[in-house]
Length: 130
Ligand SMILES: NC(=O)c1ccc[n+]([C@@H]2O[C@H](COP(=O)([O-])OP(=O)(O)OC[C@H]3O[C@@H](n4cnc5c(N)ncnc54)[C@H](OP(=O)(O)O)[C@@H]3O)[C@@H](O)[C@H]2O)c1
Image 1 (cartoon, rainbow, N blue to C red):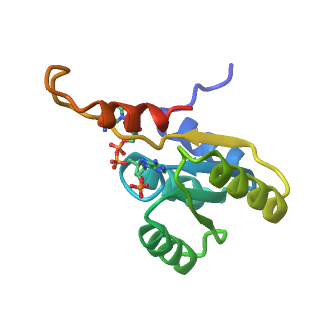
Image 2: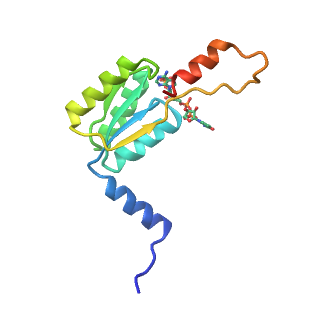
């Protein structure tokens, strides 16, 4: 009878299976996107990072390259601007030849009440979804 794997062994298996794949991560300049990008790169995934604050993504790129991870691509991109997204995707395909994973994470969330909210803030929030 085969022995069942522990959670950490399953996690190690999953990360090993990702090695060499290509991931596009939006919102990679902070929070969940940045942490996901770092975890994937450390597992040997070639990552393409998209967000507006490219200084922060370049910092992450330097850290990952210093650790010996595959060199990330960085694209200063506003995901509500379709031409910018198209450019980043085309460049990613040109450099890496494939895209296996999309982490569609970029977004802003307004936490106030609907009463008194600015229409412009809601429009900005929904613009990152498409
Ligand atoms: N944390 C939570 O509890 C929670 C709960 C529910 C949903 N979420 C959602 O999960 C995602 C990540 O949350 P987080 O907590 O990690 O937030 P965060 O630290 O504020 O990160 C948001 C990321 O989205 C990027 N972003 C925002 N607008 C963008 C735009 N127009 N174009 C490109 N990138 C844009 C930001 O980069 P730039 O500013 O550099 O562009 C940043 O990298 C968000 O979509 C958020 O709404 C989070």
